[in-house]
Length: 181
Ligand SMILES: [Zn+2]
Image (cartoon, rainbow, N blue to C red; front, side):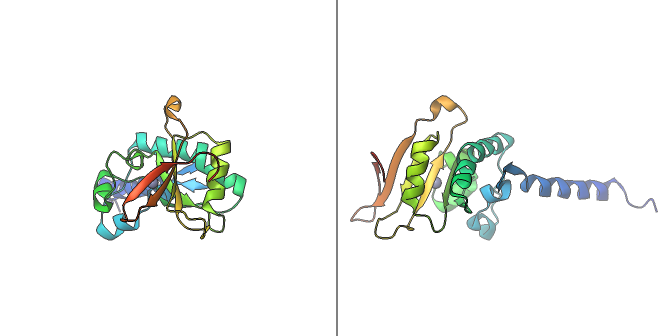
């Protein structure tokens, strides 16, 4: 009876905005939640909300790279890490200069499809900046995952292909992949 003031109304609309924003569809099969979800962020109460510019970068990454992969293999593509806020980068020991911190990169896999097979298809068929086959070994085709980035400045997309591995001292090293993985 007139006691519902602007305060309540505003609070309601803010929540509505937040929800619709996080569920924002970035491409046919990917929404913002999937590209921002982080167990570490949730566990530690760290905000992981990309700016509008970084959201746009995520949208391009989905539209140009992740969605075409999803469509080709016609199977669920699981993103294990997409956007990382500066605080989240610090919490997980990732560089704040990483392309993850700009919404340009995602780590993913398609369960049941060997990561090198996905890697080789992307290399032959898509434009991207950098792709890393991470900790994959041929004795275990489903091991590891793929890191891929897309730069909104299309001239920057140089298709650098790397493999990440641990050397005998358990230090992470990178080597170029020439030809198929
Ligand atoms: Zn990554």
